[in-house]
Length: 338
Image (cartoon, rainbow, N blue to C red):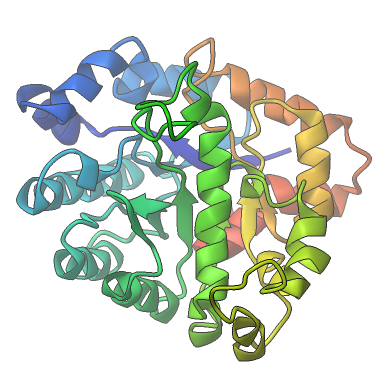
């Protein structure tokens, strides 16, 4: 069985070297990630890929977002380095890396729109990676609409990656999140919130051809289908200080119907129950194989291996298995079938 990994992360050489040489957060991040060589060392990354027959990756940058690494000028420079570097890897190793998704300096919305155009027209990007908030700003802020419009116009997907740090406290009485709760539960929450804002803001009605891949099998959404469905069918019933019922009248479909139109990936860190739940919610036509490589305890191969094992354990037809493992990615990213 072939596998195209739709969501995994790598820093190309020139961007990585620029991060190491810089000051502030970019350098701090690069120093911490040195313990995961497969995130920046191409030879190590290729060794990981060599362990799996018929396996290839759609590349995207690792965390944090470009806009978290510096001001608009720095973020724009980093984004260009990232997109150029990923494009070079795809050109040099098309059998290993058949595509990549571009990164954007979202703290400079006009520059981000220009970089999105450049990523598609000059670099050959197969999509865009956008994070669930932009330094605290929601994605339905009007400043970001042109980026969604560009993705829809080029018929390229947006890959939605969660972004949340320890500075977002779990309780109002505390100043930071403890025990990495910000990651374990905060990231799925972030993904779900961003999906909801895209739904209720009307962006998906305005751009019906927009395709969005929600990382980690849609965050919390599949498990909370009852709340997303009949729960949100009563939008406004719990609120007395504003008329939320008008939101439902403005939307063209039930909230649940929009959520089911998102794509999602299998990066659940080897969880079979989560995979079953996500497949039941989104369906085999909307789910793509992904591993989140190389952020596993083995620093590269473990989540790939365990995700394949989970899928192999499911009672799926050959046709459905092929859709999840590589055909959905070929279609969504516009890849040439090998």
